Length: 113
Length: 116
Image 1 (cartoon, each protein chain N blue to C red):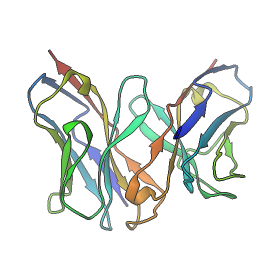
Image 2: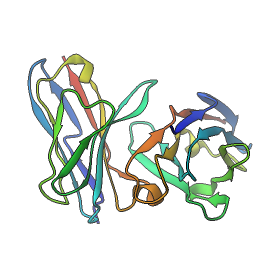
Image 3: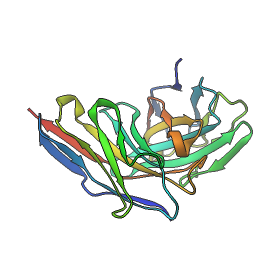
Image 4: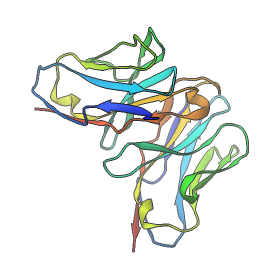
């Protein structure tokens, strides 16, 4: 049971480049979320999904897209990277977030230069 | 609206002494509350959770927390700190009614240092 798997672990992008952060879970969780973590700001929700085919915006969605074609996968796309997107990104999944909390991946450290 | 306040951004204790990390919340509904731990350069791990059952909740690694509705608090404690407890700790409240609510409200974190 791998839990939540994120790839890559580290990435350096140039301003304007696009890329996709991958997230996969093998626990058959309906709920999946993407967070970014910045010093002094805690975790902020970017996008979330309550099941395959259903996504919605969190509190900081600008510059990011998501899709959920399967229960297992929830990729996060950076459309045109900006230095302000330098952060650590976490993917998380849950069967019942309000009762169980989330299981987190190990994170992707992204630097945009 | 729900909110979470972690009252200390940094806490420093000596190994073997008690740990207290304070968390206050506000919620219009009966909340679910969580504590997560993040070790340096690692992901987040669930320490414990309160979901309207027993008000004293026991978690992993000897941590526990007590839900006090009258004080709107959910403080995290451990009787005796270990060096391996040095980490960032996050208090989290669920948004909306208890159940399959999807959004969690995060505190800004408390950094715990353990001195030998």
